[in-house]
Length: 208
Image (cartoon, rainbow, N blue to C red):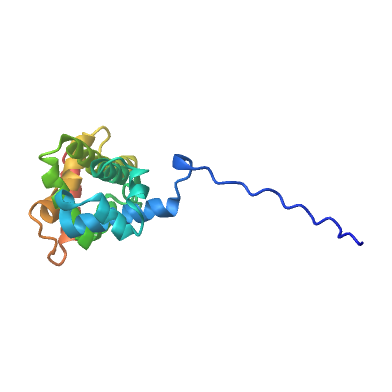
């Protein structure tokens, strides 16, 4: 009787760890995208974990493994906006930096999803201190880093005097466009508005 040569032994297959040890990043990103879409479609009050999961193409368990409630989910995503921030302009002049910042911000605020989500979350912030704190952090810190960079660069170039009040500078830089686009919700800007706003803001900063 002939015997078959020993077959090469296959290494044992490793089992993927279960539970919270494995959280696929592509699933997490799909859920985050679904939250923005769901907020824009139905608003925070009517948003549900079920709706988010359905839109993301995952089960509810996948959402709950990452966030324990819709409030914590939204707080996490809004807070992440502060970390991402805006690109820091570097055109070589104060007015040029302001103009570029306003162009980028204006496009972002005109986006259909942002134009629906921001007012809705602001309304929720009036009733929910946790959302209010997260919104303030996201909106202020996202702009603060960029505005501080613009002012600091202008100080180095001698376009602004050193030691100006950066909090007041942030209000001057960020206030007008947010007022027009978010508060009174009139995102359609007249021709030349952003250039005029950049010039006026630069003059106001020089007067500090």
